[in-house]
Each structure stands twice: as C-alpha cells, then as structure tokens.
Length: 489
Length: 95
Image 1 (cartoon, rainbow over the protein chains, first blue to last red):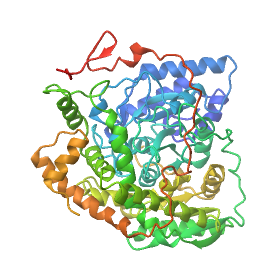
Image 2 (cartoon, rainbow over the protein chains, first blue to last red; image 1 turned 180 degrees about the horizontal axis):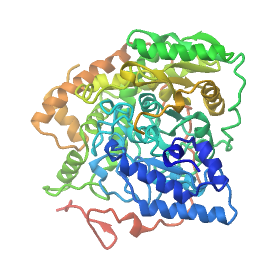
Image 3 (tube, rainbow over the protein chains, first blue to last red; image 1 turned 90 degrees about the vertical axis):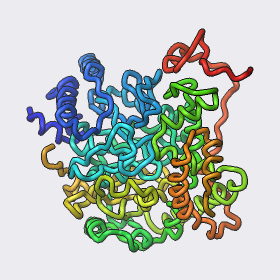
Image 4 (tube, rainbow over the protein chains, first blue to last red; image 1 turned 120 degrees about the horizontal axis):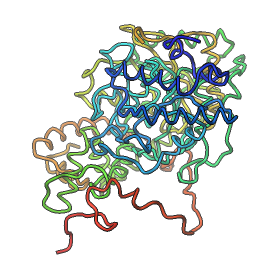
C-alpha cells in the first residue's frame, strides 16, 4: 500500500479504485486527511473540523461497503465550503453574523453527496457571504496560498481552493457567483468547475445573489469533477430555480475526439490589462489544443467589458435583498445593547456584517431605491441580456470558448484590499459567464510571475457540461500541470 | 453623481445598518468610486432589449397549495437569540 503522502496525492478516481479494491478503508482515508488538515492548520483553510463526526461517517461508509453496497463515491472524503449549511458542523458563511450557527438541516448538495457515502472532513473558510476575490474578507482570517504563503489563494472559495491544492481533501464544494470557483482554481493551480445556473440545487446554500449563485467543485481534474457531478447535480423541487432536466452521466464525453472541435478565442479577453506571463501560458494551452486537433476560431464577446459594472449593480442589489433576513430576530448575531427594535436590528447588522457585505448592501439598496431603480438596476438587467446574447452568437461559430481566468497570477495580501474597485476588476474574465449562466471552468496551464499558477478558462453553452469536461480532460491527458503539488505538501 | 453624507445615512437607514459619521464619510468615498465604475452602463444602447432577471429566462415554478409536513419547530428555534413558549422575543414594538 502507498505511503500516506502518496495516497493524498492520488486523484479521486484513483482513490475510488483503491477503496473499491479494499486496499484502503474509508476510516483510513479519513484519518489520513484529518492528520494532514491538522499538520497544515497554518493555511487556515478549515473553519470547523470535528474528527469524531468524520470518523463516524467513515465507519458507516465502510459498514455499507461490507454489506455489499458499491459506488464510486462510497467512503470518499470531501470538504464543504462554509456557505453550505451542514448539521453537526457550524455554518458561518465566513461571517460573525452567523458565528456558531448550527443548521437544523443539510444543504441539498451536502445531502446528495452524503447519500452516496462521501465522508465530510470539515467546513472550509471563505470570503464573508461569498463576497470577495481573495478570501481577505473572511471574519475568520486569511487563507494562505499553498504555492506561495505570501499570496492569496483567491476567493470567495479560498479555503476550498487551498485545501485541494494542499491535498487536504481530494475534492471540495464551492460556489461561483461572479468567479468564486474559477478564480481561486486559477490562483491555486487546481481545477474548478461552475455548472450551468440552476443545474445544482441552491437549497441550503446561504444566498448571496440568487440569479447568479451556482454550486460547483474544486478538485484535481476534470475527470474527478465529472465523477462527483454525477451525484451532485440534478433537479430539486425545494429550489424554485432548479432546472427540470433528467439526471446525466457527466463522464460520458471524457474521451471526446478533439479533431475539428472549434475553440473560440474572444479578442476582448486578450486586451491590455492581461499580464504577459498569464497570456503566454494561456496561448501555450491554445497551441496545445491545436496540436490535439482542435481548430482555433476568432470570436467576439463585444459587451464583455460591461460585465463588471453590470455585475456590481445586479449582485449587490440581489444581496441587499437576501441579506435583509439577518436582523438578529430569529437567528444569527443580536446586539447586546439597544434602545428599541429598529435600533436592535441596526446594531445587530452593523456588528455582524464585515465591511464588504456592508458596502454591497449599501450599493444594492441604492440601485434599487426610488428614483434610481430604472437607471441602474433595470438598465443593468438589460445590458445583462446583451452579454448573454453575445454568448449565443459566439456559440454559433464555436463549440467552447477559451481564454484567461484572471489578468494576473495570485496577488499578495493587502495589495488590493484597500481599493474595492481594483479588487472587483479581478472578476473581469469570469463575470460574463456568470451573467449568462453558462458552465465554465478553470484548469492549470502553467506558472507565471513568482512561480504562481496560471489557469485556462473554458466556457460552453447551457447544459453542455459533459462536453466541457471532456475538452478539459483531453488537455489533462496530454499535459501534467494538474498533477503538480506545491512544495511541502 | 456624487453621494453626500446625507445620502449615505439615508441608504444605511433603508438597509437598517447603523453607521457613524466617520464611517459614512469613508463609505461615501468608496461608494463614489464604485458608482464611477458603474456609470458606464448608462451609455449603452438597450433599445428594445428586455430586462433579464434569470440567465435562462426561467419562470417561477408553482406547486399545489397543499399542506406539507411541519418542520421540527424546536430544531428551527435552536439558534434563536431569545425565545419564550415557541415565540421569538424582540423589544416591545407596540406601546
């Protein structure tokens, strides 16, 4: 049997085969990862770890296997972003507002994966209420990038990304509203996939922006992602935006033939602002696709540059509505001293929310207010449709769209934290797919400045996840960027 | 368009978030930067373009108006800051 570190460096697919062959038990795997999580506490990726609960789940998975049950995910460890509510582990959304909150139910995504026998390692750090691009907005401290402890891991799913990059979990759930899976995947050198909006259930996913929030995964490869998507994605009657489509096998196109595949390259994603080191790695990846038989096609997303202003009107507006439930009445932080009900609510919210949620709530309140609704909110929703239409036009000429995920490699702590707008611009290449609701992923394609990872973004049309994962898998069969592990992990 | 201190206080009140004058001043500067970035959308021609509230133009699904099993009230109230006899307690509202 392999040594402990060797096991942790295995793909989820390989671990699954070892579990199936009886060469490792769920309890042994759980112990291994719990030990790694403890050893690498300094990353601050995890917020709530409860070994006894994890080991109980692992023992149960082993018992199910002993009774004859089989399944690719039976006994497989996973960690959940703290934006998903979980029984047993606290659910804080990275905020003081929900410090110590114990949910009476599990999120749909958590429930589905537990049903297949996945073993929960613990809750992962994130930017507060999923608002941020560096995990510097967590009320529970920064998360370190395992590739370079002086760099951010990305956000808002920084804990998920750091955990997977450091091999503290073979897979982690995450959410992507404006890029919060893809950007940390790029910064942390791993694979991150955001499905079509509405494909995974949002039941039990603490809401930030309801028309944008999408559950997804951070993991080592497209193949590993496909295996978990099979259990994770699907209609849920409890989520009123859940798409009614039959369940799919997301591994079905992994061995897609790339010959003749049209890869669209949008000119707007290669303008000024894109750092040369990132551009070089991305273009090298495009060359790789050409060598694999794909055809590169010039496409245009003319309104893509408007994505940031549109997103920073719509997302805060929706957030101002979603976060109005946090009033100190039924759950969450309640102020200690207040004069009356309104004062209690105002103080509870002022104390419970950090600066970024407050900023976004204020922006959102303003753009929805009387006299400004038409010029801002309604206007932004119309421009959103222009951006979505651009994708439909582009997909008439190509099968997938490829480009950078971020304009630079991971930045250092504090570099953008003082200037909210400069932080928002980190989402430039990711928000268009969010606004259009199309599936998109980031996978490692090289290294840039300071030896920090670079990600390649692939986007496909609605419900085309299987092909998207196949196109990524073929690249990962021909290259080994996704197998690299940071020194010391 | 530039936000004044009074604007920030008014919005904070709408959002039910307490804010001091110092915080309002700092926030006004940041909000003005954000709005300067957002202004651009005003110049875009959106004649004949319908607003998009859902990326797939989804429609609200309806269900039968039938009673479903009651959730566990005790479990739901476990995180209540203050409660009594199955009710959430708040400062007196009606004099």
